[in-house]
Amino acid sequence: MKKNVKFSMLPVALTFLMANQASATDFGAETRNNAMGGTGVASSRYGSAVFNNPALLAKAQPDDDITVVFPSIGAQISDKDNLRDKIDDISDDVDNYRDTLDNLNLTDLFIPGSPGYRQVSSAAGSLADQLESLKGKTASAKAAGGIAVSIPNDTLSVAFVAKANARARVSSYIDQGDIDQLRAIQAVPATALTVDPDNLKSTGFGRAAIVSDYGVAVARQFDIGGVPVSVGITPKLQKTWLYNYTVSIYSYNSGDLKNSRYRNDDTGFNVDAGLAADFGENWTVGLSGQNLMSRDIDTKEVGGVRDTYQISPLVTAGVAWHNDLVTLTADGDLTETKGFKSEEDSQYVGVGAEVQPLSWLAVRAGYRADVKSNDSNVFTAGVGFAPFNRVHLDLMGLYGEDETWGAGAQLSMTF
Image (cartoon, rainbow, N blue to C red; front, side):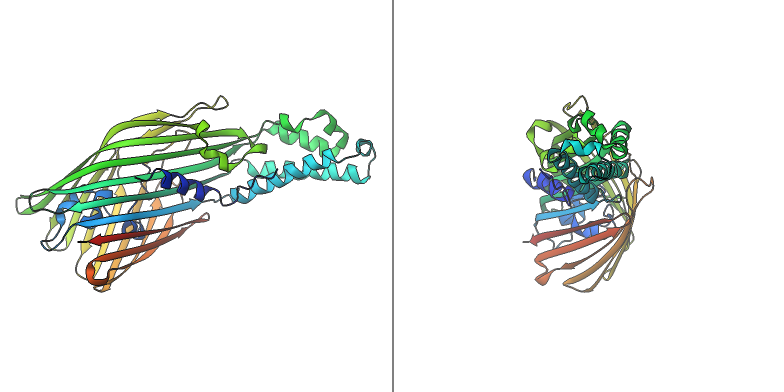
């Protein structure tokens, strides 16, 4: 009867992403950018620019060829309240409490000091302790992935992209009446005869969203007063799957979160756009706008509960200084990153650096922070390998406050 949800959030998010492989975009689909603090609006390479700023697609060099990213994938998990272990523990305590009642000689409930009396008192008290420890606790996971084909051209560069972002969150509502009843049983075990464990009211909530984009980006560079300015746009078909899993916390099973009976979906149209300008040989500034058309999508109503997922414009500005050896970059969101209305919004800033000591090796690091303090701040790092400058393998990892960690990998080929 035990329902193990330990380490469940990350597999759930990855399962969603892989099942719908081709948008909260603080954790994006491009591994190099994630390794550099989540930056990329001014520093993305042309072959993966379509993930962050389509304008940079036009910045291919004369000797650059078609680039295929297949695939890029990454994930991040945050569990500052250690909810995974706490829900696992409460499952044990629920099973222990029910087993104690099922196997009890009922006369023991009226005999203080008897084994049954002590077992019921201990089991009820332990369960009440666990409920109190779950108040206000949350755990979340994010995953992102994508594929892209970028075709540079002096007249009009083109890219085909399929990408997806998945996010999942677990939280709880703990009814004080449940705790009060369990404390009463702890004090007077015979009270258990008047309390049906199946009528306790505390609730577990699972929310998940997948946003998949399928688009074609076009970009071109212009000369404006001697300044090279690139403009890009990505019209895209956007499909969204939403999951609303709302059940008694005593029967919560994270594996049910992705069950189709808790899911609904929506299909629509959206667009990304971007600008980039070069000042001299070393400076690039950029501006990107993702999901420029707002959409609010309701979840399925479950247990009388409904939520709304918000897809809203995310505008980010970036600047990069670069030469053949070093790239330094910084990005900042000008708008908030939204998600479910039941969650707090975030707004991110990031800084990153890349050093390329050899033609086939790059070392990267960065830092990303939520200025609204609703998400964990993280340090990022990664490496890139490019033998013969044809096959590129990028790896990254991140670690931050509140037990936040993540990893990603990307394989791309240039023809």
